[in-house]
Image 1 (cartoon, rainbow, N blue to C red):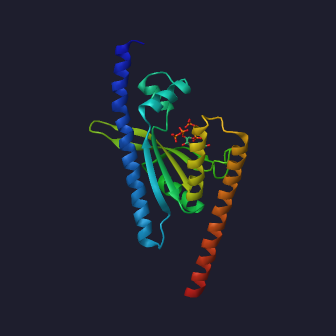
Image 2 (cartoon, rainbow, N blue to C red):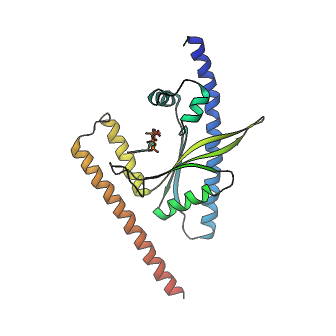
Length: 213
Ligand code: 0O2
C-alpha cells in the first residue's frame, strides 16, 4: 500500500470509530435506565459500576493484523466486534444474568453471540459473561447496526480479572507457572466468595420475609 492510501484509510477509520462511541453512549443509556428503574423499586442495586472503552486505533490495527483481517473498513466492521466495549460489574452472579436478560430482550438489541465464562470458566480461571450485541446508531442519513461487546461479571470476578490482566502484561504474557497456579486458586476463591455471598443474601431475605409475614 502507498502512504496516501494508508492516510486515506486512517481518516476513514477515525470517522468509523466515532460510530462506536455513539453505540457505547446508546448502550450506556440503556444500562443507566435499567439501573435507576431497578433501584427505585427495590432496596438494592443490581449494578455496582459500569465502565466503557473505545478500542484505541493502535490496538484496533494490531488486532486486524493479528487476526489477518483485510485492511478495509467493511472487513474491520465485520470481523472486529469489540471496538465498543462495556463492562458491567454486579454484586451477585444472578444480577449478571438479570442485566444480560434485560438488555438482550430489548427489541432494538440484537444478540449475536454469548460466551458464558461463568458457567464454563477459561482454563486460567477467568470468569465473565460476554455478550456480542448489535445496537442501532441513528445518524442523519442512515442507521448503522453497530457491534458492542458487553462483559458482565461480579465484583469478585472483576477483582480477579484486573489483577490477572496486570500480571499477564507485567510478565509480557509469559507468567511463571507458580503464579498461574496461584491465580487459578484465587479464581476458585472468587467463585466460592460469590457462592457464599449469594447464600447469605438469600438467608437475610428469608429472615426478612419471615419477620414481615
Ligand atoms: P481488552 O484490552 O480488555 O480489550 P478477542 O476479543 O477476539 O481478542 P476472544 O477470545 O474471541 O478474543 O474474546 P473473549 O474470550 O470474549 O475475550 C475478549 C475480552 O475478554 C478480552 O479483551 C479481555 O477484556 C477479556 N478477557 C478474556 N480472557 C481474559 C483473561 O483470561 N483474563 C482477563 N483479565 N481478561 C480476559 P482483550 O482484547 O484481550 O483486551
